Image (cartoon, rainbow, N blue to C red; front, side, top):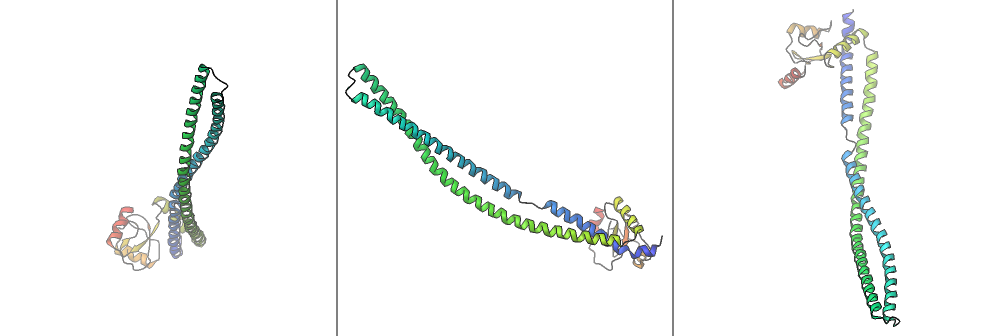
Length: 256
């Protein structure tokens, strides 16, 4: 195996891993995008409430029509009873008493029908006001939802465009990389939690954060052969001098 040839391709593998990690991050961002579930819930809630009020108003109007028919029939019966009672044709006291009782019952029933009709009319006035307010609420929620979806689609498109761009770059750099190095990379990636190659930051491993020996760091810098961290086994890559904080080192140690 020509180590020098492989090491010359090390930057490609380092870049490949960066692209693959970016694709994972972009995929996670898409999965975490909210398509507007809360807006959809609010919209459906207002719509259901609106439909419920409309249905009730419609049922009330149907009931009022039936009540008006009943009242009309009742008025006809009252008129007939009054004609019999006051027309002078009936003179029998017993029959007159019966007619008076029937007329009283008819008028009492009509009053009940009148009261129900009035109650429904007042109820309908309140329902119509409520429906108007709910229609306004629905328009507001719908407009907010529309704006949110436009922004959501915009962000989603940007993420998908970026994914397509990174995928293309990843494939091109993979095609141009050494097959031997790719095999080493894939093997380490599968065994080391997806992180196969890391940069040397001062004298620290960029993967596990452990201190590297000075001789090892010099061999990494020379770029003459593949060098591995003696602690975590990842391939070491030299990008150049970087400032690294103790916090970064501690974080790397915890995630390694």
